[in-house]
Length: 246
Image (cartoon, rainbow, N blue to C red; front, side):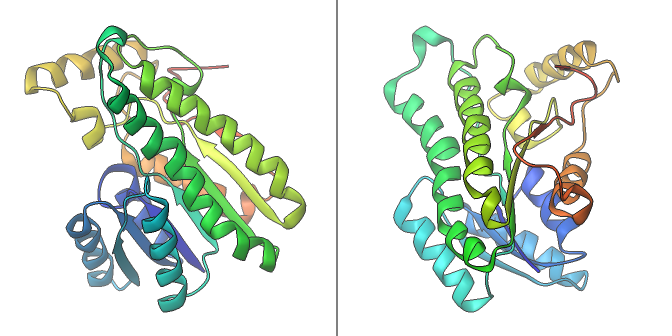
């Protein structure tokens, strides 16, 4: 089994790579080549198999080149964790067009492009699984995060469309919608004091009273890839400590 993970250099991607390397060979994509290579070395030092490639998922040319190279050098992709993402917190009146386009480019176009690049092989083999990283923000609104919320909602809609289109070809497509998880994205753009305030606010709104760990989301991704989830398709699974229920 070969698992491709985007945004694999840190956070949820790194946690999923370490977990999936226990039972498959992993291919790691990240815009930061050194971050991806560091995770690959970590996996290999623990006896796993990993290959890292630099790839900006918002670029169609880079995605097509990286996927083609990975499939040529490693083999066909059986499972895709479509995870690369960014976070920019900006009030609506201050969001520029470039910022909006960057958010949509990385999240929505990026996930579409990587899925498109691997789906041809999956449908030809009539087997494959894709898990996209969405968010609780796909179903709730958060002030100061309009672009992020819109992108994550689009990812969930994309997930459902792909699930319907490719189910007859033996491919399952689902999404994870993590709640507040202790990752670099949660910390990004915040001072230590602001991060502490954000943690306290998230803990207060979460029934389990704590942030989630990247490894807990990776466990859900692993489940969705497995035969235990063979009848789950087109769903948004939310590891969020009960913060959002719907």
